[in-house]
Length: 153
Image 1 (cartoon, rainbow, N blue to C red):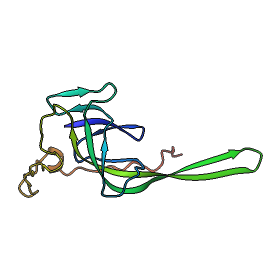
Image 2 (cartoon, one colour):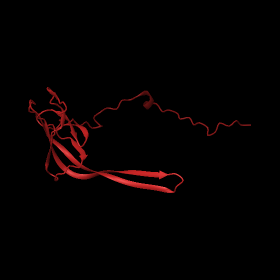
Image 3 (tube, helix red, strand yellow):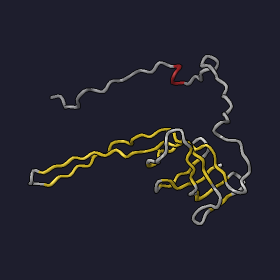
Image 4 (cartoon, rainbow, N blue to C red):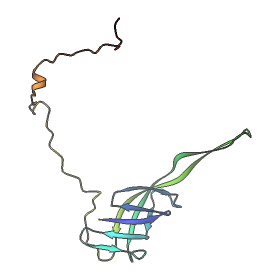
C-alpha cells in the first residue's frame, strides 16, 4: 500500500514506515499528524486518483523530531567595489514517520513496517569452492616497461 501526498508544498510517495523531512509542522514531538492532501492511493489491487485530492483518504504520521536542514551558503559579490556578503541559512524541518494509510474502499492490509523479510541463509567462504582459472594456476611473468623512451646515441 502506498500513497502520494502533498505536505509543505512538496509531493511525497509514502508507504507505512517511510520517513519524511518536511517543512516545520507546528505540533509537539510525539504527537500524531494527519495529512489529508492525498493525490493518489493504491493498495495493490485498487487505485484511487484524486481530482485534486482523494475523498476520505488520510495518511497518519507521527512527529519524531524537529531539526534543521543542511546549511545553505549564499555569497554575493560586486566586482571592483570591494563588496562581499556571505549569508547562511538552515531550513527548520520536522521529521515524520508514516504509520498508516487509510481511504474508503481500501482492503485492510497488514502494515509493511512491522513485517520482517525472511532471513537469507548465510554461507561461509570455506563452504564455497573457489573456481580455478588458467591464469591463476600458471605463474605469469611480469615485464617492466622502460622509464623513458629516449633514443640512445
